[in-house]
Length: 149
Image (cartoon, rainbow, N blue to C red; front, side):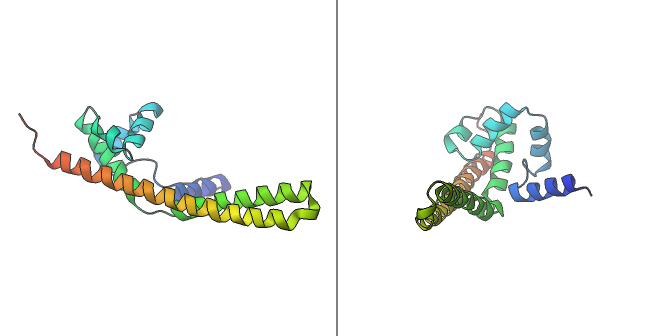
C-alpha cells in the first residue's frame, strides 16, 4: 500500500462513508451527479427538503443516507478539535509574530478560541445527527405506510 493509499484510507475513515450503505440506495447514489448528490445530502438533514422529494427511490436514498449521517463517527470529535487547534495556532502564531511582548495574551486568546470552536463544533455535529435522525424517522414512517389510492 502506497503512502497516498494510506492517506486516502485514513481520510475515508475520518470523514466517513461517501454515501448510503443499503445496496439499492448505493446503486442509485452511484448514478447521480454531484448536484443531485448535494441536494439529497441536504435533504438527509433537512426535514422540509426531504418532504418535497419527488420519487420514492429518492426518499429511500435519503433515508439510507440519513441513517449513515445519524451515527456517531470519529469526525464528530476529531474535526472540531482540529479546527480549534488551527484557531489556536493562528491566533497565537500571528500574535507572537506581530506583538512578541504580548505573546502570552495571544496564547490565552488562542486557547479561548480553541475551546469555543471545539464546543461549537461538537454542538453543531450533535444537531446535525439529531436532524438526520428526524429525517430518517419521518421517511421510514412515510415509506412504511401503504400508498393511498
